[in-house]
Length: 283
Length: 283
Image (cartoon, rainbow over all chains, first blue to last red; front, side, top):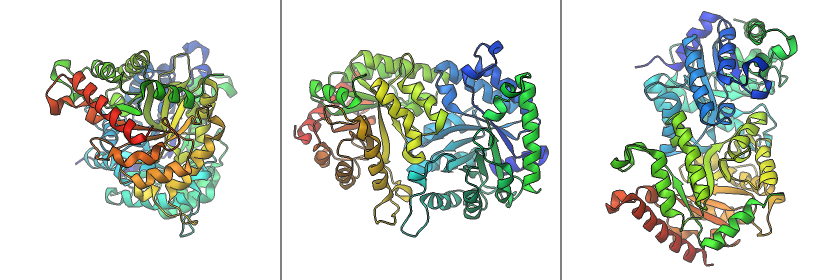
C-alpha cells in the first residue's frame, strides 16, 4: 500500500515549513531572450530556484500542449526534474472524461510505469463516475487530485447558479468532493482528494474549508491575479498542510520587474511568499 | 472572414449525406496484432475506411496523451491525415480553463499556423469567460466547439441537480451554450457552438434540441454504449446537419467481431450506421 497523498503532502509541508506551490506557465515570448524559447530549460531553472521554498510545482499543461509533441517532451522532462529536486508535481490539466477515457488520463498522469505527476487537477462536471479512476490511483499509488470547485475567474454563470435548496452550485460540488475523498484521508487528516478554490474569493475560501474539512485546498489567484495572502488564514484551520497557495506568473516572470537573473528573481519571490504564507497560516 | 463552422459542417453533411462521426479511440492492446501497437497507422487505416461514409472523425486525446510525446506526434499525424482525406476533425479533449490558459488551448487545437482540428470538445464548468478564446477562434478561423452539456454516463450527481427554478443544472448550461453561440450562426442556421448530449438519454436529447435550436448536437453513446439510433430522430429537427452521431469502439474494433480486415470491418460498419442515421434523421 502506497503512502497516502495527504500524508506525503503533510510531510513535505512540515519539512519545508511551506505551503507555497509555484505554477509553471512557460510562455515562449516571455522567457529571458538568452534561453531562445527553450521552455524546459526555463522551467528547470525555476525548479532549481524555488525548490528550497516551495512544496510543489504546478506545470500548466496547456502551455506545453500548445507547443505540440516537443512541448509534451518538455513537460515530461520538467516533471521528472522537479520530482528529483524534491518537489511534488501537480499537473494542471483540469481533465474530465468518463469510463475508459478517464482511466487513460489517470494512467497518463498518475499511474503507469513512471507516473509524470503526484497529483492532477480535474474537472468535476462529469460526476463521480468520471473521478473513480483517479480515486483508484490514489489508493494504489498514493496519487492526489484537486477538483475544480470555484475558479478565480468570473465563472459565476455556471458555478454560482442557485440550487433548489438555496446553495450556490459550487457548494454542492464541494460537498461531493468531500464525499469522494472521505475514504482517502491519511494519518495526517488530509485527504487525497483536494479542491481548487480561487483565492480571489476569500469568503468562498472560508465556506470551502467548512464544507471540505479534510480536503487540501489549492488556492490560485495570489500574485498577478491580485488576491491578498492575508485574506487566506481561514483556509489553514484544518492544519498546516490543509491549504496550498499557488503563484505562477509573479514568480516565473519576477525577473521582468527586477531586472535580475530569472532564477534569482524567482527564488527571491518564492522565499518571500513562503514566509508570508507560513505567517498567515498561523502554524 | 473564414467560413463559419456551421456552414462547413452543413456543406459536408449535404455532400456526404451523412451525420456520422467516427470516434478514434486507439487502445494499443485492442489493435490488430500485425500493427505492432502503431496507433497512428491504425487510425489512418480507419480514416481511409470511413472517409466515404463519415462527415468527421473525433480522435480522443486521452488515448494519445497516455502514450506520452510519441502519442502526441501520432495525434498530429492522424489529424492531418484525416483532414487531407476530406474529414472534419473534432479533437475530443474536453478542455476547460481560464484566461491565458484557455487561450493556449484554443491556439494549440484551433488556431496557430496549422491548426490540428476543426473543432474541440470543451467543458463548460468554468463559465463563459473560459469559452471566449474558442469563440474568438470561431470568428477568426471558422473553428467550432462542442460543450459537454449532458454526458452519456451516470453523471447525474452534478449535471442533474435541481436548480431554484426547478430545472436540472444541465438545462441551465444548455441555455448558456445557446447564448454563447448566438452570434456565430452561419447561413445554414447552424452555430459554431455545439453541445455534447449523451444519446443514452433520448428524452434529454429532445429537450436539448428545444433549448439549443441552432447548436449542432454531438451525440455519443450509440454502439458499444447501447443507445438506439431510432430514438434520436428529434435531434435532427433543426436540419440535416443539426446533429451528429458518434460511434467509436463499434467501428474501430468491428474486426474483433467480424474477423475480417480491420479497415473493411470499420468501413462496413460506418456505411451501415450512416444509412441508419440518414433514415432516422428524416432528411
